[in-house]
Length: 66
Length: 269
Image 1 (cartoon, rainbow over the protein chains, first blue to last red):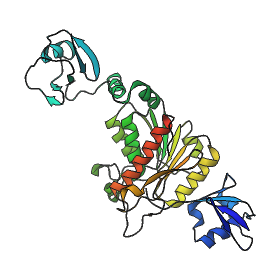
Image 2 (image 1 turned 90 degrees about the vertical axis):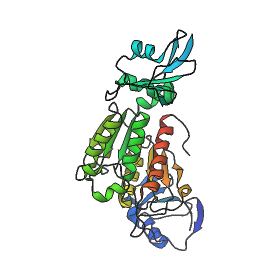
Image 3 (image 1 turned 90 degrees about the horizontal axis):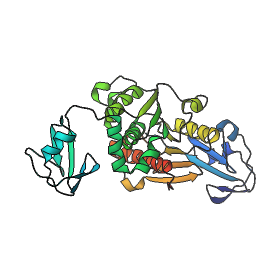
Image 4 (image 1 turned 60 degrees about the vertical axis):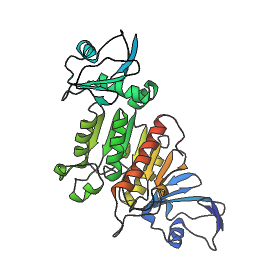
C-alpha cells in the first residue's frame, strides 16, 4: 500500500489503521493532529480509520512547552 | 516659518519660537521638555527638524493622544487596521503572556485571553508576571499588566479550561486565533478543534522552543491554509531542558509577528 505521508511517498506492507501507523512511527496519538486527504479528523475517528492506497496523510506532531 | 514635530504631530511655528514659548501655548502643565532625545533644563530656540516631546509627569495620555502617537509610529492605515482587530489567545503562560504584551503594545483593539492557571513562582523565569502576582489567576494578572501598558486595549479574560465544546463561544469573532498552551496534548486538541470548527479563521500555533538551542532554529511555517506553526518542531520541555525566557520569547514574538502580518493581509511564511 502506497500513501503520501507528510508530502513523501511511503510504502507499507499490510493494511493499516491510522492508529497502527502512529504506533509504527513511534508517535503518541494524543499529541498529533491528523489531516487525511485535506480533511482534519478528530482523534477518535482517526485512530480506527483504515488507510488505503493513494491516501494523502499529514501528521502534525506537537511537543511540549509554552 | 520653522517646521517641527511636537509629540509626533507636525507643527509650523513662527521664526523665532523658543521651547518655553511653545510649552506655554501648547502644554502649559508639561514639566519635562525633551528636544531631539535630550531633556532640556533651560529655554532654547527651536529650529526646523526638531523633535519635541512634552510630558506632564504622572499624567496619563488620553486615548486620543495615545492614538496619535501610535499612528505616527505605525502610519494611520496600519494603525487603524490593527486597532479594529480582535485576537484570541489560548493560554497565558510564557508564549501567551508575551504575545499579549506585544499585541497590546502594537495597538490590537481587543484581546480575548483564556487560561485556567494561577501564577506560580517557577513561572517567573519566562512569563510576563511580577513577583507580587504569585497566586493570582494568570488572566487577571495579565489583564492588569496589559492595562498598565495600554489601558485603551480591551482585554476579555476567561479563567477557565478551554475544550472543543467552549472554544468557539469564548473566542467568537476573533480575526486571528493563537495557540499558546504548554502541554502537547492540549495543543493538539485545540488545533484540531479550531481547524475543524473555524477553518476560515487563521490559527498560529507553536511547537518546540525549550532550552537554549540556537535562536535561528525557530521558524514560522505555513502548514496548510490558515494554519501556521512556529518553533523548531522538536525541542520539547523535559527534565534537564526547561523552558527559558529568551527562546520562548523568540517563539512568542514569531507568533505575534505572524498575527500582525495576518491582520495586515500579508503573507506569513
